[in-house]
Length: 289
Image (cartoon, rainbow, N blue to C red; front, side):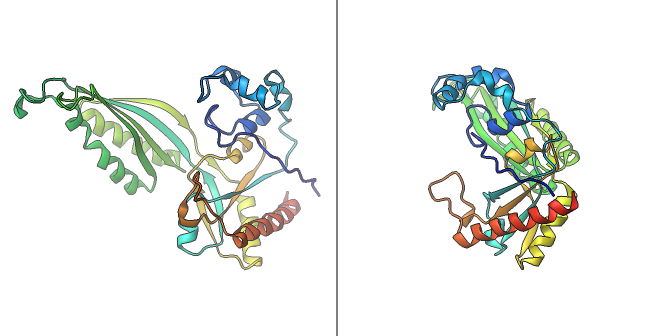
């Protein structure tokens, strides 16, 4: 009932433009200012596109009409170890998590590490350190993930008491209400120790379409493929395509949960299972939409 398009998006993983550049262009959500941002090598994104044979001034021509697609499906490796650890063939993705990032700054007083007695110190790292296990506790309590990915200690000398500590904090989850609660708890904890808790970015969760999820689950059962409904902890092109049409995703196992590494591996049979399910799912979705 519907024609099928196979889309090969450019630069889903590339970080020089924030990721998922190709699908942003197709949907019309690519910020033109992105093209004039420096990439990892100092050259502008625009320059990299030109080298790849892409005219950055024609990116607007890639935008499609909202009614073009009836649905969008994406098959991907899990990039985690849930499926492999439980010997499950397929992950039926319920949604793509929201990602919130913050800059947390603790300020103390930098002073001589040898001559300043312990009772007279204003050590910013001592104030900041309890947040690290608290992020883990909060994430476990709410069923989300939380990470402190960078920790800058100033002035960063072995003989100077830390005068300032700057942390990059990230939380990810599929439910905005849960993220709100976790954010509030983390903010309260940090500010109680004198920190400045500043939001950096907020990408909301994107839910998969329930009709597509049911169709894919039924297809798994008919193909005798063990499956689990699960969130995607990473961003994908599907989250952008959700602005155009109903979307869903399928995962196949990643050995040992390794991704973005030379050790990344998905067994051939798992790839075959994913491809067969993608076809069976498309056939079912074609009939219900």
